[in-house]
Length: 460
Image (cartoon, rainbow, N blue to C red):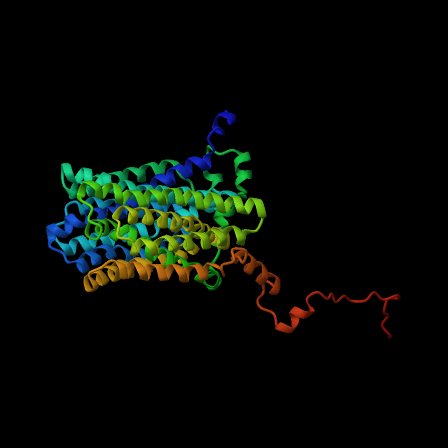
């Protein structure tokens, strides 16, 4: 019986379920961009107003990063992700019945609440299910499914639009999200010890110790240490996220308005760059894990992929702006997005490396950079298009932010962890509290009562 259950490891089944979540959630997120031209035509929106609809998702998304991750650390990722998936599933479903711009913005706002804490919660779920040597792959493959969701959204949504209209697309996707919630409830557990299917051998492979999950819930969140170790990762994630939001929100409009593709070709040429990202996500995670196994140097394994990814994306984005050939522009966009997505699994692995049992909160801190970029990028992009009449200026600004991100990535060190900080602090101070600074210098010395050769006698 044990051999039969080990043909497919339990952690890989859970990983597959999480891949489906990333896939569906990204379709729910990106479908507004594909339906954007139809919504804009039906409701008479300006580019700036459409940018506001796009960015309405990002405001609560940014706020919920830290809140969702912290809740997952305290109450477990199972309960938190069930609630979040119900929120985004219902909001997606109701978008199909929207009757005004105000309601559309409100539902996008609610969607941001649901999806905002989802990825930090999923990262926290991997803390006790993925060994360190598989974390890059886990983050890579899940985000590949996210990009795959983004890539198949244009043909799926446009096909539904052709038969029933853009509203039907949101209704069907909302039903799919709610169906996933049921699947997750049946399969996932917060830790291996709560799962009936897992064996002792696989638990040992993961490196999980009985009681780790419950002990982590009782630990106070070390906010100061987390911020000190994660702020630079958050900044680099902002630089990465700026361009990613451009792809997720403005790519269909750019290809249609600036490059002149008709509706028939729009689905294909919108999907190509996103499909390149599917490959890039898995590739980046696998390469980072392989470098770690080969060299044993965690900082090299993470930073090298970040630098190559963001630098390569910059290299292909600049000629895309200057080329006059629409097909060449699509190929440059695809290459740029491939390299951009190489960095994504590493960015999501860093909270696991640096924060350990606080990975939910750390993942929320990190992805706050992405959320803030989503608040600013679509609106600024739309404003610059409206004022300059061109897409070249906003793309050039995106290239500049990539260059800044490359510099920031050079200083990230995944070996400086919160756990090391806590251990160092425990060595410096006893349980009773802090000790004076001079006592640290004397701590190696041992003071003992000398042994007397003869016992003392009291004089009468």
